[in-house]
Length: 191
Image (cartoon, rainbow, N blue to C red; front, side, top):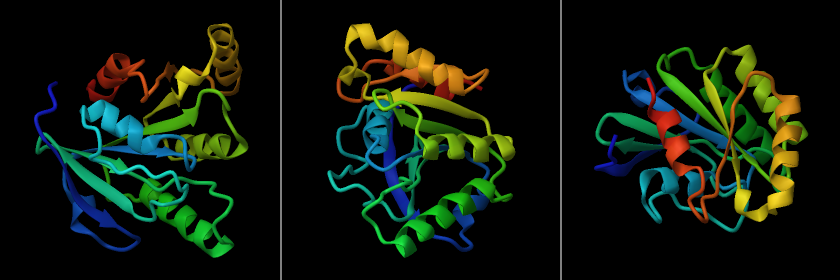
């Protein structure tokens, strides 16, 4: 598949919205704050700044929909686990993420869970994996920021992650240097 067009459509917060009922594939990207979700989406789409990234964690506070090739939605969910936000703000983001993940209106979706390759799986990542498994979501795990790993660390970190998730392929990725883009692209768009 070639990416011919990609555009921001709208941001959604908890409530009814017709976009959730459309019969388009939704590819949702989720991960901790500051893990590089926006950068991974831009890498996949071959765009530099379509999805805005911020040096300030916790900036995304709605679910952002991007229409790709006029037929698929890329869905940028807020990052979870931003510690400097107030409890109320963190709780609001948590409810928004759970609302999207548990919405029965969305029938056709894939989830891309993005983790930090150097940090590995955190407690919050493991909780998210548990939620995804409980709701029988089809999901892929991307270990972003692989460029920050030394060659000698790569296999060790990958094995540490694999020990905690069973029967899941982990794709090493670097939004900075493009590593893993082809493999991720094929996984995202395979039927």
